[in-house]
Amino acid sequence: MRRTATVVTALAVTGAVVAAPPASASAVAFCDELGGTWNGRYCHTAVESERKAVRDIRIAIPAELVDDPAVGPVVRDYLATLVDNWKTVGATMVADSYGEADYQIHRRGTVISAVFRETYHADGPDFNNAYRTFTFDMAAGTRLRLSDIVREGLDPLTAIPPLAQPFLVRALDAAPPPHQPGTYPFVADRWTPDKVYSGGYKAWALTPDELILYMPDYPVGRDSPTDFTPGVMQWSMDGGTVQAHIPLAALAPILRPEFGGV
Image 1: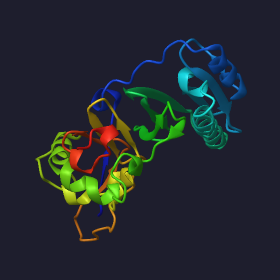
Image 2: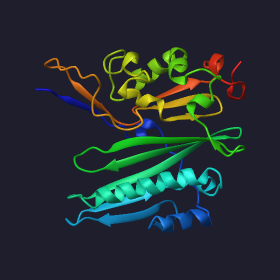
Image 3: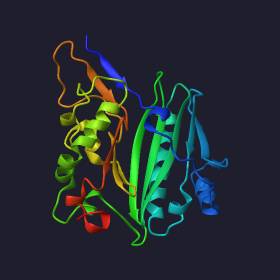
Image 4: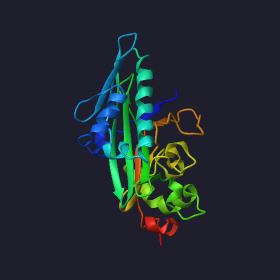
């Protein structure tokens, strides 16, 4: 029989999420647009299904971003879509469930990275996590892609892995659940950008001195390609199970000067 090992990343494991500050008037107004009620920390709403199951929804709103005329529409669209999706799923549930989104802000000069952690629960004893990240140059009013921080002509998905290798291995060894370092699936060659566990480096953030990769960005059902050898355990992976902190100094040979390149 094929077994599945599920990795669940709890709040205590992945690190504290910065509590949302008091919202501005526009954040409260945005909560109204979402059909929610501001409770002092979260925009809260709920939907009841035909089976009388209630989905409770809470999202934290980064006021400084939703207020910004350039980057605000991106964040507003993301949060509105998230709430709509959770409401749609909630309307079909047969058991109570919840969805919650918190955020953390990282700053590096005029660059801001907003890291949203989505936590949701439906059936069963476990909850799931996902990470959506947005990095903006607030001075220019533009969103940055990973390719925007590396030197022109370089592909970040091929340039970053060799320099990030020792820091990725360190993160893999520390990832939950406790395991023998260097054992499958926590081996570096299963977490390169072309493998499903890495999430393709979609979720990332800049701090004053690090590039953080949140892997995978969304829960992954199992590795690919699948090893169908009898008795081999199949591993699902929760979003953000592995968080690699890569010093910008280690990436200096490939970074643009404004991001620490030399």
